[in-house]
Image (cartoon, rainbow, N blue to C red; front, top):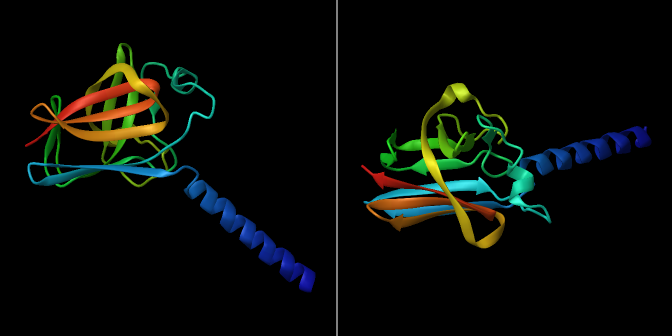
Length: 173
């Protein structure tokens, strides 16, 4: 009886540890910016290249494919005020962010769902997108890095991984 109980406890501990490993495999990052009295933040998982290149990781994406933009739990944008990203209006609230490969580059996609596991993308919940400008990062980033910075008439959201840098301008309404 003791052996059965010990085995059951051992399996329960293993299952709990395995579940927590799925919940958090990579460190989380957060970036914040205050713009016109409103705070904007992006919280995301930070996978590392670990000897691979960003081309190894993202080069397999075909036009129309989505990248979960980070790792583990979906990347979440929280906006205390209404924003515009290019021609896209993004009302205050919380959204998951995705990157979609296009025929001629990349675009940032805003999805009404947030908090889901990072691979659980529901395209029916996408409501806006903005083109991303691709350039070479000044310094390679081992881990996915997202920054928000003031720039132009508003701000700039930048995503860097390896030598890849993707950015888009935004403004507070």
